[in-house]
Amino acid sequence: MQLSESVYIVAGGDHGLGISEAYDSTVYLLDLGSELALIDAGCGIDPGPTVENIERHGYDPARITHILLTHCHADHAGAARLWRERTGAKVAASQDEAGFLELADEQELGLVRARADGSYPSDYRLRACPVDVRLSHEQQVTVGGATFTALHVPGHSRGSICYLAEIDGRRCLFSGDVVFCGGWISLLNCPGSSLEDYGKYISRLAALRVEALLPGHYGFTLGMGQQHIDIAIGGLQGLWPPPRMV
Ligand SMILES: [Fe+2]
Image 1 (cartoon, rainbow, N blue to C red):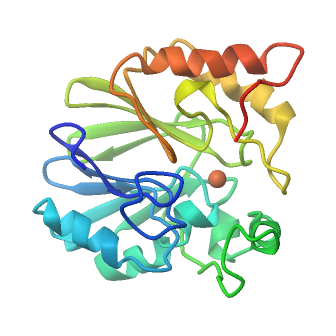
Image 2 (image 1 turned 60 degrees about the horizontal axis):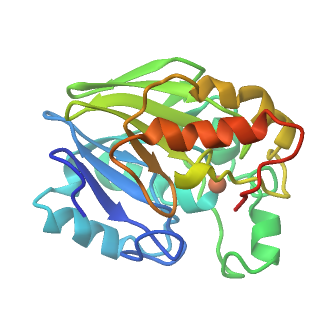
């Protein structure tokens, strides 16, 4: 699905557009002129539909030069190794989770519990992947004609990154699982997920004047994105936990 001149959704499973493998997060393909980037990679069970979606839009997956991971949960990062091997793309992830992906640490990344409760197939395993760029808060990454600012917002996971960039004249925030449309957040009962961290760091997303909010699951918006973010901020800064959790 093409969202704007340079932004496409090329994967999304049961908690997204339903255009690729069921466990995939939403994966965005960005045409940044001389280079292509993916925001997140999917789970890696079957990359076939994602490849077809990329090719259907007229792009050669081999041209992908960067894979920017919002975090290292399996539905977002499980396919990183596969894409890196196929394309030679650089993988970028938070310095707080990169080591877990490189070791395929399923315990620290919550996969052991997620698999036990049926959120993944019993035979699914996370593939370890080298991380080429270890990101810290406010570090910038330039891909083609766009500069992405990595905003480290722990809460959903300890190394969750939101990427802020101006693309096609819009201020875009690729928010991973930190905040969804409607101000939903995603607190998990597994290592690395913390309501306290959410409350402490969500203000890093305040006053960004985000237009396009492009999360890792469910819907997206191309305008007024900051309003959705502000609902989450308001909820997390009050006495009671936010009314909406996924
Ligand atoms: Fe996640």
